[in-house]
Image (cartoon, rainbow, N blue to C red; front, side):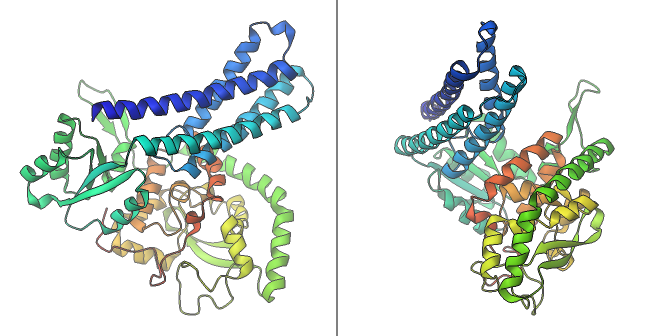
Length: 452
């Protein structure tokens, strides 16, 4: 098992190294062919090196090098986004060095070639990976409640993982210790803390790969600061949401981005408004009460994507193949253009560009009945995009949505906001990100036994 793990890692490193070298060489070609200054001498190679390092860092932050478990589409989109950003920064640098506006065509050609090459390369490597390395055989050890919802999710990744056994922790530590040795990995799902810790220590001792589904308290601890008060490790969890300086810079960024966004998107919003009005002569905007930081209520604005009588029978989330969505609305939802008016909500301060998705009060109350800690999401302002929006889906269950949003709150940084804003472009190409709930559901609740 150890040798196979090393082979997997070697393939990933080699594949990523080839990508990185290709990026550096392709930039070097256009630099020496179009832009370099003969007086730079060795400085030319420094410029190429800086470009390669910058592109490496931006791609790594987008998880573009996670060939072992990321989906092909997500990998291609991560690389594509990083290449576009790298090309834009490179061109700005070239113009600054030259003190003039230079021909942008070579950079555009380089970006296109890099995207095409890396897309084909990622697809090829994924096929090679699947050919030589079959899905990891896993055992799931669960607590009181069967992990039915989790199994549905993990079974969607049969290209990487194969659940071979599902075992309840109440069958005893002796049975667990005997069984886990036969698998390539162990999944610990919703276990009592003491039992989970014992199993985790056993897996660590025997070098068994372990996937832990975190509890709410785990995520809170994950965002703690290390302190060295004495010769004993101390974790400090502030539990206050964002600090004053973070809120200030976040608000300044919100004002700038939303202001520019409103100006740039105005022609698009005008076209959308005309299309909605022309279809059924109904109202263009849809207003709805939502919750933001501290449980404060505000009126959110969206382009109307459903029929006028869509909620005649009460509040409910959009469903899969929802017949209440108009033809214009389907286009808006698939491209997430129905949310453009929320730029005004951000500008006036009701929302932030990045934060937890704002929920309706009546749906929020239903979620709290199942997940009592759901109000932890209200420690920061609601956002136009966010951690759960980027890494989750529209129909992500409340407990998983809470865990994703709490991860954002506990690990907040200015760079994380910027990263999530950039990764939001990736959502447009992922159809499942806007997938509605099942037809028999009114909310995203699936398993009322999930408590986090």
